[in-house]
Image (cartoon, rainbow, N blue to C red; front, side):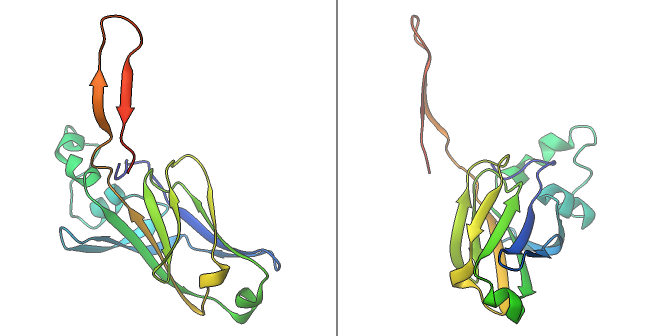
Length: 168
C-alpha cells in the first residue's frame, strides 16, 4: 500500500564504534514521477501530510475526503534527502541506517545502491551501509504500491476458506 495518514518514516545513521547518531528527521523531498510532484516533506510524516501542507490536497480528515484522496495510496512515492558524513563517521567500524515506520512495501537506497527493503511498517529495519558510505550521502526511500495482492479467493461450501496471495 502506498501509505496511510498515520504512516511515518524516521531514519537515523548510527556510527556504532563512536556511538554517534546523525538524526535524519526533518526536511526531505517527496516525489511522484507519474504526476510530476516534487515537494518539501517532513519526516516523520506521510504523503498525505506533505501534500496537505503544500496545499495540493484538501484536509484528508474532512468529510469524505479520505474517499476522494484514495488515489494517493494507489501510486508510488519517493522520499529523498542528501546529507554529509564526516571523517569520524566514515572511519567507524560499522554504519547502520535505522528506519522506523517505513511503509509496508518499500525499497531503501543509499547513493543509488539498494541497501534493503521493508514489508511491515510496524517493525524497525536496520541496514548495513558501510560499503556504500561516502562523504556526500543521498538516502532514498521508495514506497511501492502493491498492485495485486489477492489473486484468487475461493469460498467453499464446506471446509476452510482458501486464500492464495501473490507476492511481488
